[in-house]
Length: 159
Image (cartoon, rainbow, N blue to C red; front, side):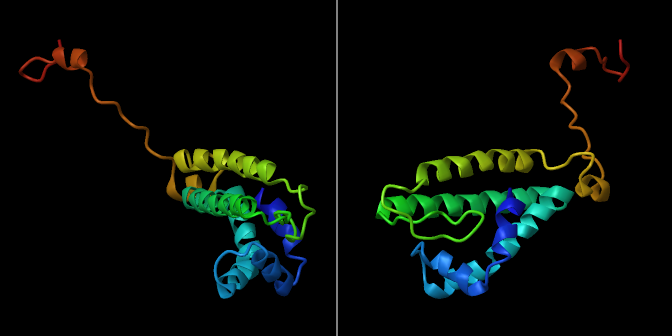
């Protein structure tokens, strides 16, 4: 998903990317310009890190945070009556009144939060670099149940 949205943005100039972020009219211009400049590279890095499985939990958490920022931005557009397309996979541009897709854009991004949450909870798989570099996580050992401990006699012998 991140690569799908980042790659087209790489073909645009930083001026065009900055303008697209400024269209949201959120925050100071300097912050919008900085975000517009780094956004495609951030999305590209997140996509590549998830694919190779390096820093998976952190990458998933950053992805979730970025998605929440995007969701908040889209909701704020609708709440303020600003009609633009979200710029997902391209550049935000003016849309005709009543021709926005804010609800679908928010639902899509909420859907993307599901795999991010999964990777925060279960960050390693056998194919991930994290598993290769850090080893497989040790299985969690359950505490003995009361019936298991009742079979042990005072001398430490099992009956």
